[in-house]
Image (cartoon, rainbow, N blue to C red; front, side, top):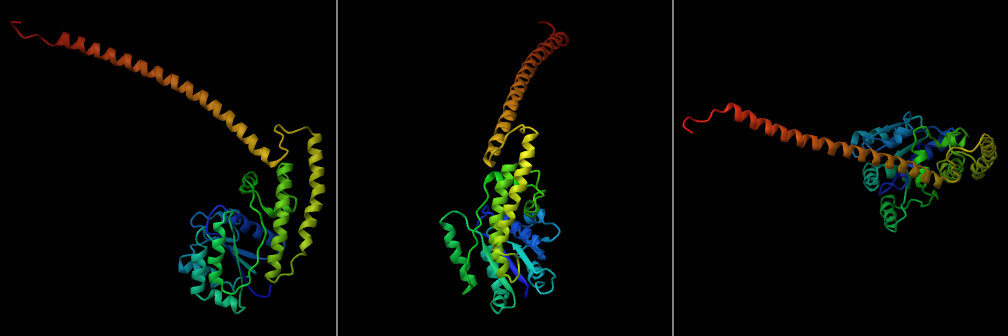
Amino acid sequence: MAKPAVVLIGADKGGVGKTTVARTLLDYLSNHQVQARAFDTETPRGTLKRFHPEITRVVDINYVPDQMQIFDTVHSTEAAVTVIDVRAGLLSSTLQALRDIGFIDAAKRGQITFVVLHILGPSIASLDEIAETAAYLGDASMDGLDIAPLDFALRAQIDQLSFSFRALWQGDATYLAAAVEDDLLDWTGHAFVQLGKLERFLGSEGAPLGAAAARSSALVHRRRARRAAHWRRGPPEVAIDRSGNAIIAMLEQAGSRIAAAQVRIGELMTEVESTHERAIRAEAWLHLLESEIVDRLVVPPQGS
C-alpha cells in the first residue's frame, strides 16, 4: 500500500456485529497477504484479541498514552493496515479525540488513508448516528459496505475460538456441519467481496471482485463431495439439514437436561422434607428428655 491506512470500526450500540466485521477484515487481509495490526478498545476483556492474539493489543482509547501507542506509530509500524475495534458507544468520542489531536486533518491532507466503518443496527435510530459521525469527518467521501448480520445459530459457531473466516475460506473448517458450513461460506463470500472494495480503496492491488465468488463456487464441489461421503457412512445422530435446526436440537437436549434436573430437584425436596420431619421428632425427643432430667435432678423445696 502506498501509505499507511487506519480502519476504525465502531458503533453507537453493542450487538450489531462490530467485532465480527473486524475479525472478518483481519482474516480477509491475512488471506490476501496484507500485513495488519489491530487494537481492541474493549478494555480490559478484549473480545477481538481472543481471536487474533498475535496482532492485537487491548488499549483504553480515552487514555492519552494508549492513543499515542496507536496513532503515533502509524508511519513507523511494518503493518500496512491498522484496524481499531472501538468499544460500543465510544465511536463519537473517539472521532472527537482524533479531531482534537489533528489525526483527521492529517488524513484530509493525504498523509494517511483513514476509513471509518460505522456499523449500523436495524432500527431507524441508526440513521441519526450517520449524521453524528459525518459531522466529525466533514467533506469525506461517503460509501457503504453491504454486510448482513449473522443469525443466532451462525454466531454461536463463529464465537468458538477455534473458528476463523480464513480457515473456513481455505476449506479447513471440516468440523462444521455441512449446512452450517454452506451458510457461513455464503456469508463469508459476500463479506469478502464487500471487503475487496475496501481493500482497493486502501490502495492495495487485491483480488478482483469476482475472486471471492469464484472461490466460493469452487468450494461448493468440495463440500458436496465431503457431505456425500459423510452420508454414505450413515446419517448423524442428530440430523441438521439447516442451521436453524441446530437451535432446535440444542433446545431439545436442553429440555431433556431440564427434565432430568427437575426429577432430581423433586428427589432432593423429598429428602429435605424427610430430614425436616426427623429434625422435628428429634427436637420433641430432646424436650421430653430435658423435662425428665429436670424432674429427676431438681429437688422440691421442703415442706411442700
